[in-house]
Amino acid sequence: MNICVFETPRQLAEAAAGAAAEILSRAIEQRERASLVVATGKSQIEFLDVLVRTPVDWSKIAVYQLDEYLGLPRRHPASLAEFIRTHLLSRVEPGEVHLLEDGVPKLPIIDAAFTGIGENGHLAFNDPPADFQIEDPYICVWLDQRCRRQQVGEGWFASMDDVPLRALSMSIRQIMKSREILCIAPERRKAEAVSNCFTGEVSPMHPASILQSHPHATVFLDADSASFIAAS
Image 1 (tube, helix red, strand yellow):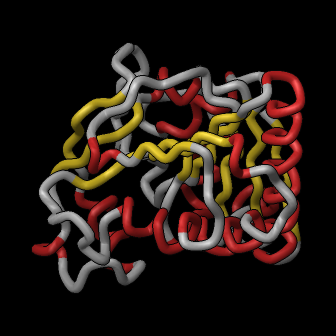
Image 2: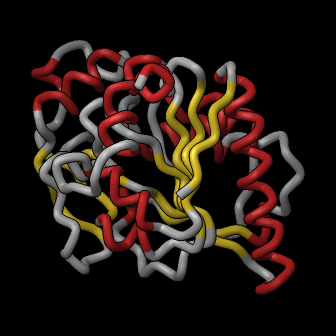
């Protein structure tokens, strides 16, 4: 695992988008197609905004979804599929799109998995303590209180009562099968989780810490999200 720290969120987004485009273009050159998993949430918006304006042959890319709430109506403004439509699919035309609202897809080996990190250290919706052993590609999970509070804090829901209790999430083992993982984690509110996950031992209590054991994972931080690391 590599950690890259940038002064501003924009610099982070540009570097991560450049790395993502390089991975996808290399996969297309080698195998004539590429596959990626898209993360969602406020921390991903600027990264995706840069990525869609970076030269990539989207017609040869298959897009898969990392996670989704259970119980929200189709096209709900807070649904993660709707996020992907808004921030990616409205601007580029991938060759294939597999959204979880249409069912759980059969997954290829993923070339590039885009992830974030939750304020509780979660990876996708694998809240602590995460299951590092389950082999299923996608699993149904209960969302913990801190995860649900984060969704309210980011403005996706008006109150805790509106946030679903359960979600469908790509499993830890499935994420780790990706050829390369790009973890995009700006903002000071992520600083504690960043420190817990990337400066200590790998532990299910800090789910994203598993990225330490991936040979081709890169964590992209800004000065704020790296602030606890810099202070240690």
